[in-house]
Amino acid sequence: MPPRHVPPTPSAYVARVQQAVRDRARRHALHVGFGEGRRATDVSLVVVKGDRLDVLRHLPELFDGLGLDQEVVRSSQTPEGFELMVALIRPKRERQRVDHERRASELADDAA
Image 1: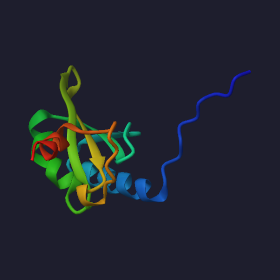
Image 2: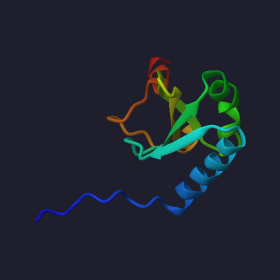
Image 3: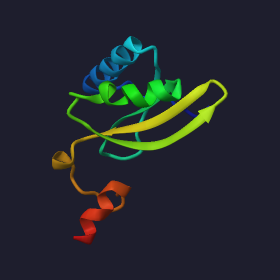
C-alpha cells in the first residue's frame, strides 16, 4: 500500500504568523484559510473571504507588522462572497534568488 500524503505541520514560525492573521481576521468578521506556498520564499498562502468591501478595507490590517511581503495571487467573487488569495513571502532583502522561482513583482529588477 503506497504511503498517503499527510499535510506537513507548519513550523512554529508559520503557526505564529497564521494565528496572528486568524486573530486579526476574527475582529473584522472575515474568514481566513491557509495553504502551503509553492515557492521556497513563501511563508504561507492566505485565503481571505467575506464581503468585498470588508476584505479590501481590512486587508492591510491583517498583515501589517508581520515583517512579510505580500503578493495577491488571485481574487474571485463566489456565491458566498468575495475571496482573495495572498501569498505571504519573506522580505525581499532576506530572499535568496532562485532563478526558476521568480515572481511577477521581481521582473522589474531584471530590467534595471
